Image (tube, rainbow over all chains, first blue to last red):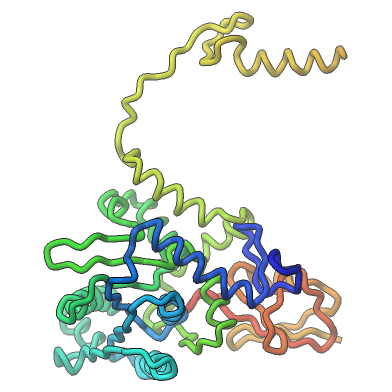
Length: 312
Length: 66
């Protein structure tokens, strides 16, 4: 497969865009597209201070890298969650986040939950009895709280997270399965600021997880490969796997699912009765069945067309 | 005469001469879920795998089963 821009051997093929690119052009294309999404969804400007939530994973480090390459004022925030589970998860993810910051001379704020609140995330989960034996609910709550606190206290205009399209599509899929209308109406690339809550944005929301992995590999960004040990077997990962089966059979299905949702929500069609009167119907002059077209109904038109071809 | 595919801590062997895509189907891995590298270079679905190739598969869904 050849690069669409220069014709040399391609490194990445994006079937949903019918676009294959070589390393050089892929590494150009990703920031260009990110800039396009930032402007399209009015996420932030070059005059605003951005706080990037950095976990040490591919998405957040990739996001930080792209924003800095685009010339945005982007600092990082790493939250030490105190998750070990025998693989030193938090320690390793912090090391990689710090390594990236040091190598690129960037500012990384580090907040250790245990040092700040006296308990790590697993300890908080156990003692608060939230989350049915898993600390994920407590972790999400603590992350949202701390990210907002730091953004507000340190005077950042906006908080950017590395959610990619697979993350967004999996959340959308879950919320659609349960018709969680309140969540559906809130999901989007931008959550505007309100009453003490910082604006939250997701500049990677239209990139597949696969594209972020490719970006980090080609850009030489070292990231933590293993997911949080508590995330294994989670519902969101199961949904992502299901959506990838769909994507394999129908390239672009994930992207269409998410983008059509955003469009539908924006136009106000979601969960609102369609009050438009039914289009005026009249009887087909040939068969008498109702049709919205001015002349023959679609079926009679098709029969007439086929007959004309047969007779010709 | 084999091609070795490595995904996390699992190793698979397939016959040489197949494309990457066919090799992935053979071991029941979705192409959409992985990025394949050979000798440190990313390769695409239409790449023909040769005898002795060692292909490292990088899972794109962290924590996924595949």
